[in-house]
Length: 560
Image 1: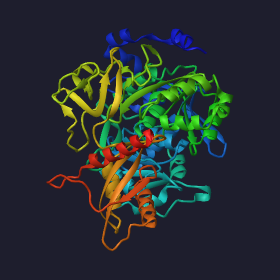
Image 2: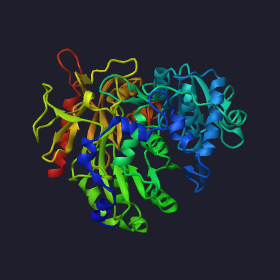
Image 3: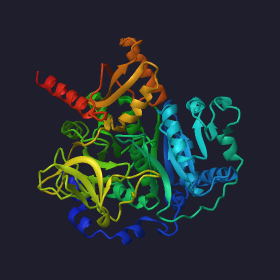
Image 4: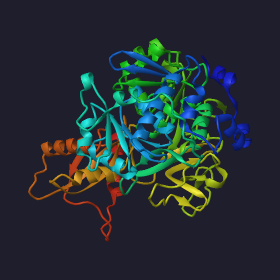
């Protein structure tokens, strides 16, 4: 299948789609209701509940398969919504879930939405500290978990009501917990969706920053219009596709575009409840006949590491592949074209924005390696200098969105937090980019200390806070160290109390401490013990000095 065939068969002109964007028309074409009365469960489930129409393909790590129709999920979401109401959950309240990619997760999400409540995801790799910060900041009324993750909640102060999906014979359900299926099955299968307005929230996300703990982001219902736009224009999701976004719904890309986006289009989504490996990924692609795939460059580089022989059984099967989370390496593009006979495109976004700069599969425009693409229809993206003026072509500046001329932009600020990211009419992303001659945008790098590792955004403050909890640590600084496989790894510089020796055993103990308290993806893969940390005369930590040292070392290693 040639690139020319892919383009001429499906795409429309990008310039026309961008120039002629009509917000009101897009809303009418996207939603079942309108922005004055809508419910996410209606948009993502009820209106697609036709006889036999499948909403979820679920593959277990043991090889078992399950399918759920929109009609089944409609009834299950009603039962869960009735349970929430019986527990006093009101519209606008937050409900959290610490669940793997299983049917119970989707029932929880849809049932929460049906009740007019706000769903707040908890990544299953989080430790108690990360979970506690989120459920306390969200003021969650209830947490749904499973037997494998239940013990983490024992270390969460003031943990809200717990609902547990038990293992065999109720394993993992503690005294005082509600049993998920027992409660769901005893509730009525009808619950009238609670209608809300487009500016009312239906998701509460958390995004890592340079200072302070992860910040809460309220996602309003009208964001569904933008999510569908991304699925349609950038991912090119079609009714004939089998779609799989391998991103975890504990994060924005997975929750926005593995759950909300495809279901709002009436398309089934795919859950795989197991670890990511080359073998498991190709197995699911073959078994389900996946034609449209989305994920991160780190996952795609692991597929490359599996070699051409592992890829050969699905060569030519994938019609389109989309990449997000970090810049896409040109080598990945070349390899996917040669060994999988497919086109992979780079996309850029943030938790606060969704995806806003893309090489669109369904829109015809130039595509060059190293470019994140063009502004998505409904968004005006600019590059600003330090004085807030638009940069010339090739001049690095911060990527910004013009709020007045971006009708699909939905972010308005952090929940109960100051939002320094706004400058007049512009939202400043914190990412340094350049505009190219053809109007596309190329990513240069973060202009703050947020670490991007394997597609995850990791705030150094969270890791530093976990390390400081250890009795051996006086102070610490965490930076991203360049890494060819993960883009960056987390590296910690640690100052010890005098009565503790800097040993490999202590380094491993500190790593294990962070893995347990925070998460398995954010622990420092390298720890360097130092006598002091670089600071300003006023005592402010200068992470950039340490980060620049690591960049210089990596560059020297490449040239030696």
